[in-house]
Image (cartoon, rainbow, N blue to C red; front, top):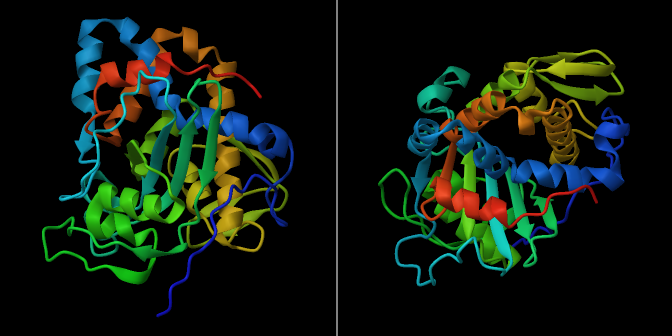
Length: 318
């Protein structure tokens, strides 16, 4: 199979089809609002620490970690999050059916790490005044650098072409970081990986997320059923909204990405509109939900590192 480098570009414009272009998906505001979702974890952790030492240690114990680099990679240590150099973070949603996610299918569907259902490159500017987020289609074809097998088998050899989202299942987050980093020329200093339960539990914690579609949706594959107009989704309905592929636009991953960005923008708006950032008990519930459902690289997988990152961010509407 010949080498095929797929282009990576942000998808902030509306696709022709069912996703409305109302305020949920307005092109001018979407990126700035959606970018806030990429750092929501650090925000809620900052304020949730206000519940005290016990809460601090509970959140710390929730966090799972994984290696940033593949064995044998000769890279300098990840840049500290408290300096003023640009920081690139790979944010991933996995479709694993292992552990608590087993109810979504058998482990043979996507065992272990699972494949990358969502991939986002988050760039924090050196002055921490700007956050740029680029969604990467999961079907992107990229050269594969070769990785250690995440399940402990023989190493995966390098190949001229490989579907990008499979790198997570093959070699874990460090393999996906290396594969995407080599393709895009980005040195990711950190990663965050969330599973299905992160969406389900977080949408339940906030009491649902408002979405808007311009035609009815009835997707038997994702089991998403919505009327035209505005609806509130939470739990498995929220997950179905993010995962459905045939319901929006031309049924491509690009249309799906547009819907995902709209969902995350709406989620952040709801958190802000209900004064969650000043409601410590509610904020702690969100932080607890997120930290129980996320895997971070080892240098970021502690509350002080998250606090340092959040303290350097100036988050405001663009």
